[in-house]
Length: 470
Image 1 (cartoon, one colour):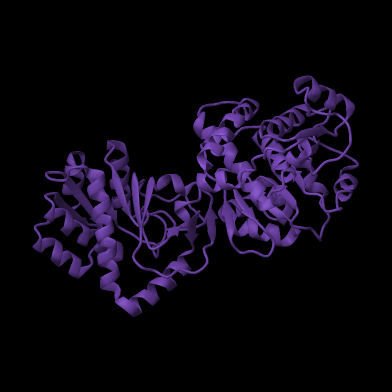
Image 2 (cartoon, helix red, strand yellow):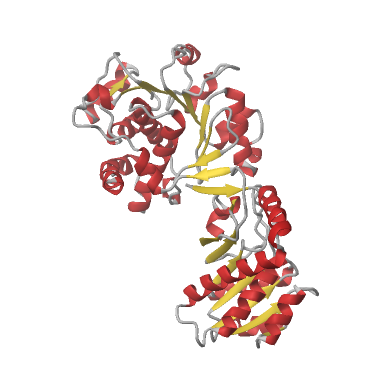
């Protein structure tokens, strides 16, 4: 898993390290890691050209000392100081090593001939946005296709939510120090950071704010049937989904459940909807009976008995509450065995706030939702967040491409969640595994595949996971 930290946690760890080894030692560790990453990027450094863009803070100092190391390896390094001040000791070392200073016009003039730009303008303590002259330079880097290596994070980008739409650098590579920042794990900031390399500079960090699953975590948690498995040990999932107005939701949720490997799928919707499901999936049983999990709400629309259906599952059976069923949750008193799967608008409704508030800080919003409802919450979106009541650490699914941002993906995801709950995963792991496997399928089969076709790719993806785990 990848751990991401709030700025306050990084700052506290830095202050502790300053007291033990001193700020200069930390800066030299950071500079050494930064220089090594740049040299790997240059792949044959002698004669390459790099331009440092420097602010007044420690990020500029990291870039300057990295520049000294690059100069010693035969890289032609120049520097533009964007303000009046710069890290004095770093600047003296850079000039002594043969570094060349440029003004703004000169920096822009030589930009097309540079192999890369090192963005050392601003760090985690800076406000989002760039001065106009620097913003214009950042735009020029993007327009000309000059690679940017960001020091700790792309300047102008907020290190953690809320992520404002202010001018910022777009990095091809971000070299970050001590611990990952939330901007390097959460969209839309994550895509701005490019490839992220973490340099260990000896910080002693506490609990992270977020933990992101990787493919190894998905492979480790995916349930694999043993040699004596039967349909009941693999898990029976019941889906009360769809309606006469929205039968497609029932089809999509069933596709997710079937192709994720349920031992049996029962469809518990109306006769008309169940008949359509069975026509498409003849292995589905359109009758009540023994189930080990339930999926409720996808495609219900206006359902008069919705509250009664939701209330009737208080027996302890694992339940996925999706879409229209979310409106029928009891006001108080939930349990972690219930998994809620809202998108941002639905989560805002649950919290009684505006959608913009959820979008501004999804980490805080999903934690509030888990605390308020007493249920496990999977917030769907470009980044997929899972919160459990009683925990302050939010877990993130394996990221995937934006191709899954289309109608019906959430219905399919609910069915996958139901299959994994029936197989015995707890709600948090089921949510993470379901969202992750859907993202992985989209990554392995990029393009505008509709959710029903993407669901058909799940068996091959899961087979690959099993092989990966072995």
